[in-house]
Length: 342
Image (cartoon, rainbow, N blue to C red):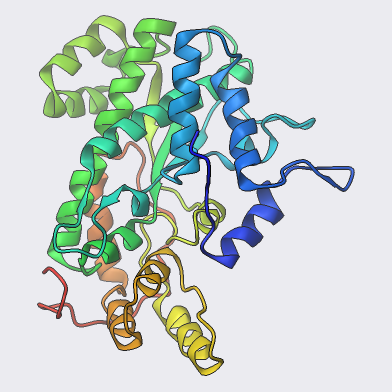
């Protein structure tokens, strides 16, 4: 496991302390966030000793400690405690897109698509293990998981892409495709290794996606079945987004008006206040206040832009993206903005 999981936002620390930090009879059991990750990994990866378990422990520990992956709130808050409890179905995991950007803030910035796919596969394995811990009963109908995203707007900002631009919609489509590919490949592999819970003939929309993704993967699904019948869902996860150093919730735009006001107030007070992950990243890398104002202006989005973005992703997401639109956005000019890709 990575040795550190640094917080860079006070709101994230407060969220961890309020929702996820383990206390027992007023005694702090999670002294640091690393203790939180460690107890989750210990429970989900299983007892040490087998090579497969040790590998899962390493991969999951690294993904949590680098904020690339966050598990269901119920798993995160209770795994390894005396009140360990969560359901065996409809478990959630989210990929933090802000941590899947290579070379952030540079002309070479890009999303590591291979990491998106492998992290999605790990999320499925993690939640399948969690469901097994919840004593999934044999013969139950196909399990539904909810593998989704947070921090997409932060990723756009680090890439120099305006939220409401065609480039953002194209990238969101490609990310959701990789999310589906990683999730489905893991579901098929787990069906082969642990047994299927659903046959592909019962999930024709999934069969279509598999044919589009990979003929060989589609063949494997016919041979082995699926471990989970539904896998991907973009749902509102504000607590997980706040914990992940205050990234934007799900696929929402950044709450621009609030962060602009807070940014102005922090400057007036002579303090360097954090405005969420992407803006704090820019601040720590010496970006001028004027440039940060410009960045925030082009991170905004009206309702039309949010709907267009969701529409670009929907074909690869198993559940309709129907959680309420963000009201933080506002009208903005996007055409060929300085420093942004159109």
